[in-house]
Each structure stands twice: as structure tokens, then as C-alpha cells.
Amino acid sequence: MPIIQVGTYTIYYECVGEGIPLLLMHGWTDIGCDLLPVAQALSGYRCILPDLPGYGRSVPPFRTFPPDFYRRDTRVMSAFVDALNLSSIHVAGFSDGGEVALMMGVMRPDLCRSVIAWGAIGSFGLEAAERARRSKMPSWFDSRLEEKHPGQNVYQWHRAWVEGFAAMVESGGDLSLSRAAEITCPLLLLLGEKDALNPPSAGRLYIRHAAREGVIRQFQEIKEAGHPIHTDQPDAFVRSVRSFLKMVDQHG
Image (cartoon, rainbow, N blue to C red; front, side, top):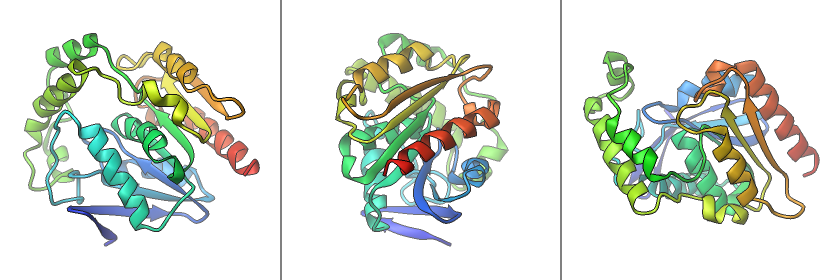
């Protein structure tokens, strides 16, 4: 079982395929193997799928959601890449994992060959905190979620995430937006046309903030897709990602 110690964190991960390394980071309440269909569709790359800190088999410690959990996860995932003795890798993530991917581009540009994020926008306003506080526990909080994260009380995660997220927003809400231009590698940001959490307009704003002369910046709005583009429109998602990766790798 592939496990590596990263400071005080134990990180479980899986690898699929061969080629240039591509880190794939999952979203809230998921685990690495939930992105296995994406990894399999991206043949020609060595896809690395970790369980993010505290999720799945990346324990101890168990998962928590302090107000700085995005920054914490960014530090741990950056150290994870260091521990694997990798550099110049493609860094990609969905939703919470997408926010971490964007922040890695800002905080550890030396690691990133490119950054790909979907379902992430780098900054949240107070209305997002208010919407989160009004939200109810999602329907997928059930026995299947318990099986993914053995030994943890997953039913506490909704409220813990809401409180951590709201505290982060109320302290400013800027994760990576104001520093987006510090991402020195090519960047691809994708959002679903029907994403109720992260509107496409926020993606376009991020790309404007990320503008950097001579560096590839792409935003794509995926039609007929909500938040999880990779499951709502898998073919369109993979085409977009493959095309971007090919362009980056051809230009070295």
C-alpha cells in the first residue's frame, strides 16, 4: 500500500499510467480513487492520486476544517510532491482540490509544470459564507461515505466545513485571486455552465487577474455541466484537459 510520511501527516496515494507526472487532487469528502476514471482517460501520463490530508487512508490525523484548511492542504500537498522527489509536474484538482492546485501555483511555482483547476475560483465573497451557513447536509452523507473514511464521524464534516469556510470568507475570502499573476506556469481553469457554487463569471475574473505576458492562460465554460464537470460532461472535460496538456508539453 503506497504511503509516505509528510511531516506529521501520513499520505496514502495511488499511481496510474506512465509518463510525465500529473497530480490529481479530489474534492470535499472524496478520496483519490474517485478520480480514477479521469486518470484512466489521461493515458500517457503518470497520474498520482492522493487522499488529501485526513481523508480516506491519509490518516492520522483525522480530517479537520480550521479556517486555514486550504492553505494547510496546500502546504501538505507541496511537501508530498517534495517527498516523492518530483518537480515540474502537472498539478490538477477539483473543487477543494482545485483551490489547492491554484494555491500551489502561487505558493510553490517551482513544482508546477502547469496548473489545471475545475470547480474552483480562488476567492469567495460574504454571500458565499451566508449560503454555506444556510445549507443542509448533502444527501451523499450516508453509509457509503463512512466506508470511504473509516473511523471518522463524517456526519460532523458538513457543519465543520461550513464553519471553517465561513470564517475564512469573513476574514477576507481571498485564497489565491489577488496573487494569481504569480502563477508562472500555464493555467487552465474550467467551470460548468450550471455550476451553482462557482459561476463562470468568477472564472473569467480569475483569468484576468492571472494575466502574465507570454504565459498561457485559458478559461473554458463547459456547457450542460454543473460543479463536477468530470462526471457531468466527461468527454468534453477530458478533451479540454488533453488538448491543454498536449500544448504545454509540446512547448516544453
